[in-house]
Length: 131
Image (cartoon, rainbow, N blue to C red; front, side, top):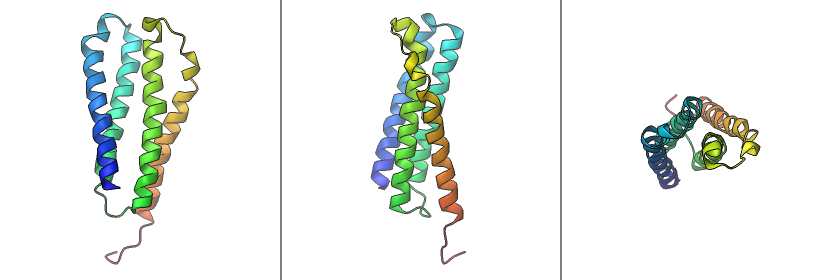
């Protein structure tokens, strides 16, 4: 499970850095300030959660099944939250109507929040011999 979290975390981090560079260098010339701001929000949340996956891979208080649930909640959250923001930000420039993504964004946010609550719950409720 550690390996899966590390692979997912590193993969999403690489994508976030690439998209961040794209936003900072190429998209600023074609998108408006509000679209750039939204795009950067997606990149920021993606990078935070990619790093969280990497960090949680090393938390010994979490079982493999708990780490698996975190993996799914964070990956689903990043895909729905971040990638819907990317689509909405780029839709005008791409001349594609992606407004259907609007309701998906908060579902992704809810998935990310659920992942954090789940991790908190599992860590607080952990009963180890050393406590």
